[in-house]
Length: 259
Image 1 (cartoon, rainbow, N blue to C red):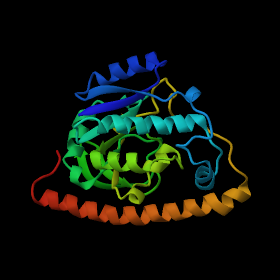
Image 2 (image 1 turned 90 degrees about the horizontal axis):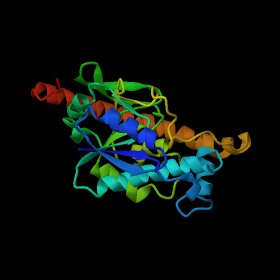
Image 3 (image 1 turned 180 degrees about the horizontal axis):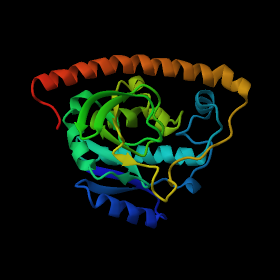
Image 4 (image 1 turned 30 degrees about the horizontal axis):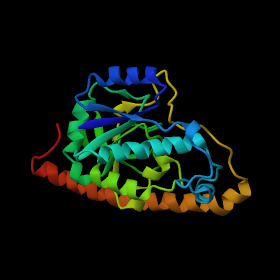
């Protein structure tokens, strides 16, 4: 299996860091040149200014847009292979020592998910489904999981996202965290087998903050959307969690369980 890591052409120190970090893994490392913000200008045909303002409540951000397009490019790179699954990551991640073992255990449940988040900026509100290896468990997060530092994805999810992610309407981590909207299933692993908070780098693709719209405009558009989105997430993932739990019990009863 391949790992597609996003990295700016100018960030050679980051790539050296990634190569050293992935030396412990059996994944085949593939560099995906990140989109340089200097090459982007607004308006842009792949960015919906109106939707972004309505749904996210902020003005456009070139760094955020470059991050989004870079992940989109990584999805395309994965689909250009014949692989069934891939890891996609950013250039400031650190793999835990048991990363490959946890990944192998996760793939034993591949029929139960399309995307598995391997890192996050906080643990969120996880619902444990089944133990994978040691302290690591496959979980469904009942809240939004921030950050897109690393995730495991199958071809169906990649094909769906490439077909539907453009134009950009939300930050990338928001977009992939709405998997039910795309007809997909998402899980996460906790504790995270990949860290995005321990390296000495600030991510070259992770966006910074940008001015919000007025409180009145956010109350009229952004907050109602966010309320509906959160309720939808909870309802879908509650149902999904119960289904996954039942499926994991069935696997355990049949003797097909992870170590």
